Image (cartoon, rainbow, N blue to C red; front, top):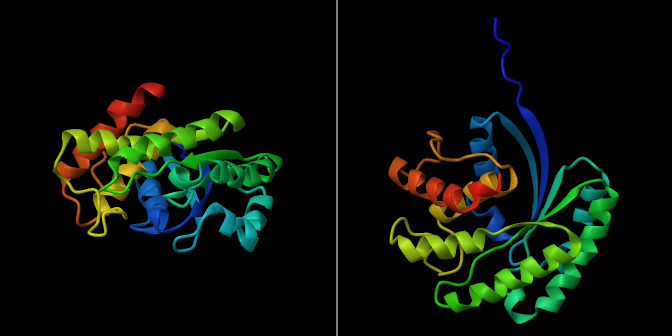
Length: 218
């Protein structure tokens, strides 16, 4: 008699703002991961518009990291800071990286996307994340690059909300697909379950985009 599969358990702490909180990106990731026999336990520390420096100064994130409970600590910087002041962003990430390593966790950087009316800034965002990621040996999850590539080929589904900044449900779902493919090395293509409000055709397009771009890294 075949033994039942045992899910691999992964503990993740997300630190960020509404770009992570909107549509519950950690929850979307956990739902898809479960379909691939991965159990993602997640905690989110979020504040609207917050930078990583804001979280550092509050002390809540540092306390959570110090528990040593997490395999991955995901850092999402305020979305325009990499463009306005990449050096400041790098300083903020360095603040977190040392205690993350001390807790025997791994630093993960959640690269976000450019404003809809300023697509040319995506390169600066990507450069800021990749540069500090390489310096610290952190994992960069390039969601912003995936957005840029998807938008260059598809008109639907819409990734931007009406404010031209925050993600729609489709945008958040694409982010979760990229996390699954690039970080957890699991294929999102073919996962049937999904959030209400996102039809099967759109889910498939987003799954395929994430896996085609990042699946070869696995």
